Amino acid sequence: PGKPVCRLKLERPALPNRPSLPEEEVSVTTKDGIKLSGSLTLPEGEGPFPAVLLISGSGPQDRNEEAWKYKPFLMIADCLTRQGIAVLRMATAEPASPEAAMPRTLQLAATDAECALDYLLRRKDIRRGKTGLAGHSMGGTIAFRITAQRPQDVAFVLSIGRSAILGKDLMMHQCEKIILSQLPATTSDSLRTLY
Image (cartoon, rainbow, N blue to C red):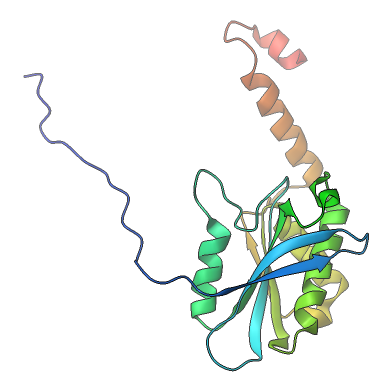
């Protein structure tokens, strides 16, 4: 009595030990003259290669979209490049110029992503007609927006964790959750509704 019947020990599986892919440091100048830093991974062998531009979600992001020591864009780039697809990941929080650290609206972020797409399409080692967009969260919205405006330049779209409701409804829901989470537990229901 009082002793556990069994003990579970959960461990994170070890990542495969493999050499990282060579990356090319790139800089893309946006239409408003801001330079954004990025990394381009190219598969082994002769190009031109199919390619994908990774578009991050809202807020400042590094090129890997790192959060809590997890680097999803780096992992996606690694996986796709090993399958023969070139991958460009751009940063909004590692600017090549100080102006890039300024807050960006959805429209400005979409324009920045278009400039990165143009950069890819100008390269001789990238296969035009086989280049697409993969966006996380707000990046998914941006990917669809660019594709609607330039269908001839985008071969495919991958949407990762994009909202399935209207933006205004999402913002209201997020604001409500943030406000309510900051109220003391003793706050009455009528005051919660008012807040």
